[in-house]
Amino acid sequence: MDLDAPFFAEHKSFMKKIFFLFSLLLCSLHLVAATPKDNSVKARQEFEKVYNMVFGPQGSMLRYDVNIIGIYKTHGTIWYKGKKQCFSDERVNTWNDGVTAYMVFKKKKTVEIHDANSDKKDKYSGKFKFTLDDFRYSMKNDGDDIIFTLKQQKGAKGTVKEVRAQVDAKTYTPKSLKLKVAFFWVKIKISNFRSGSVPDAQFVFPADRYKEGYKYVDHRNE
Image (cartoon, rainbow, N blue to C red):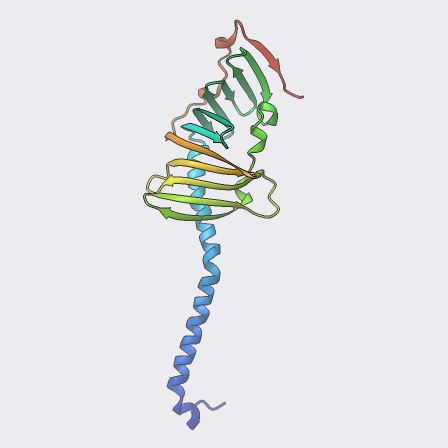
């Protein structure tokens, strides 16, 4: 095809404009198609920063106020460090060193011993299971905060269907968390958050403190 023929020569400028607009349209379609995926990847990367601040090897501490559809409410302080966990509220103190979990029920003066990963530790622990790969991620700014929304993907095996996390936009300090399990929402208000400088000794059960007057029940290997 002779592009220098009279017809093409006469309309070369017009054709260049059409070609430019066509190229621009393709680029625009590419951007529109890529944006949701790119946003999801970016949102996950940013959410993982928050997640690692809480559950990373440096450890963390926070105060929590939990409300499960008004049926169950509690508040207390919790420490995390990888798979280790320690918390205290008005009814129970718990130490989990990653191998063994000790639950001290204050009113009953009973110490229950469980395998660290057992769902039998309490009636709620097995209801809140998820991994980071379970979800599609999105994020948006809301004033001085960022709202992360995690929606469960098809094929996910976790019990948490959706997560909404509110964090400080500058420091990524978590402020609140909402978890959807089945048809109900669990609301968690977070305060006094601190990441880092949590010693391993925090997760060691202080047996000497619970010798006299306490009954021990061992549920390991059940």
